[in-house]
Image 1 (cartoon, chains in turn purple, yellow):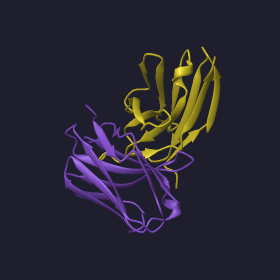
Image 2 (cartoon, each protein chain N blue to C red):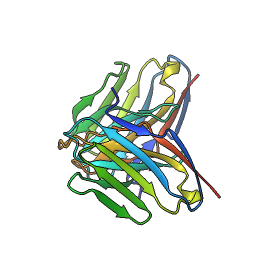
Image 3 (cartoon, rainbow over the protein chains, first blue to last red):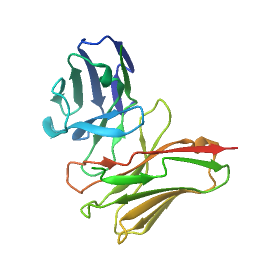
Image 4 (cartoon, chains in turn purple, green):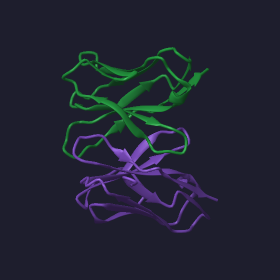
Amino acid sequence: DTAVSQTPKYLVTQMGNDKSIKCEQNLGHDTMYWYKQDSKKFLKIMFSYNNKELIINETVPNRFSPKSPDKAHLNLHINSLELGDSAVYFCASSRGTDGYTFGSGTRLTVV
Amino acid sequence: QQQVKQSPQSLIVQKGGISIINCAYENTAFDYFPWYQQFPGKGPALLIAIRPDVSEKKEGRFTISFNKSAKQFSLHIMDSQPGDSATYFCAADPGSTLGRLYFGRGTQLTVWP
């Protein structure tokens, strides 16, 4: 019974391609997030949605577009992938100010 | 601007020793301070958390010490074990209902036998 599941776990793709990462949570949380973890392990927030509404949109290239069809799902679509997009992307969810629950991550490698 | 500053970047401790990781913040609106533990290939997992109305919270071998006046908090791991080897992140939440966390840069802990 995975609480926050994201797919795929690994994604290797060429520069210029478009790809999507999917995330689903079964915790009944009302807020979902996308974080990027770089090679130095720094966790940087990208987006947050609360009940399908975009709340946080950090300084992220507009090639990245989140979509939340319902409050249990938050997907991330990336257009025109660049080498610098290579990282681990984590989905997370929370209820109010309680701690986050993270997914296991998607390792994106752009070649 | 780094909202939460964490040190050290890496820490090597002998089995049975005490591991101490420190964090500092400036924003007095922060009112929730969790610590996360991340193993290789996994997502960060909530380890222990504290709110500023208490100065210490203990769960098993893990203790958070909180100093509100100094705007500092730290994680102590007593009797450190090789299985504790992981990356630890401190974080802080400004208390909105939207759960926005600011993370420290992480500490790579290695516990050797």
